[in-house]
Length: 434
Image (cartoon, rainbow, N blue to C red; front, top):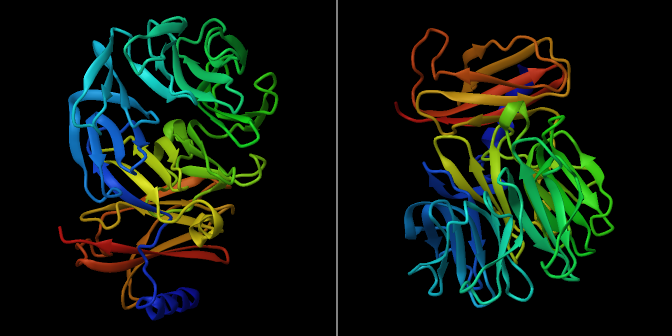
């Protein structure tokens, strides 16, 4: 109790000088629809694909729907002349806008869901299809399209990238789980011919290339053994090294300093959120965040030209686009929110009205975990029972906003205090009116 009082006293003393809402991320857009993708044009305008396309011209402060209403938009790419291409589901699957999203024209019919879009160094556009075709390409801004890679209907191309030598790579997923499909394909002749170069059976959902032309592949899993991870190739895809096998990777992005960021799914009990590596994938840290916690599934990542990170969450009643408060380069990456603490404690929602859920992870075998709620005066409001937790296992516990007598607490600021052994963590929470 003495340690908590000291911590609470420190919190109270700093309340006037610190913003406890400070976080690595800020939410710039929320929706009750799934958000699938994000793109930024040369003027800094943001375009997001959801059930339609929404646009922001003020760095995410406000958004407007600009077209394709009630059509699911899976992918976006923007050319050098700021033409926008959108890949969708439905009968007509590729749309183009030449006027910053004000008007859209249909480009290519009946190609199946367009899961991925990519613009290469010569402004040719490649589209990865979810069915019927593998990859189609246009060299004339969408007027004509050609099939350049044919794949079975069960195989879907989720990512297309190009290295500095013009070599193309495509990452695919074979959902049926039979045959040799899935993994990475390569073209050394700008898309004319393709060959399978590795990671067979892996659900390769994302690819990224650093300044040394090393390729990083993120896998959502493996259709024979399960599990996902991160892989690296330093020889143009001929061989691959496994860097991680404990995460389901949905997206990879690399900043101008070659820091690697991965967005992770929270399905099947895996840890979600965003992780990063500063040493070419040898070691990894999870970004500690109030907004993006260990149970947040990430669908999409993007690093902008000015090195701000964008992340799209999914899998709940509210889906968000998050942007890093600072750039990923220089001092921003090493701010305290990036560091792993002895105990990690987050909660969602916060602020909350009737109830909230706490998520925590302790590296200790916690036989006697104490979890208590205090008010602003330091008075004990509620003691929550956790029980035994195993080594390093993520746990959760809910609070229904009631005190020990079963009455609803009044709205205001409270503190959650978790202690195991000699380690403790204090988390500020806000209770709103019912």
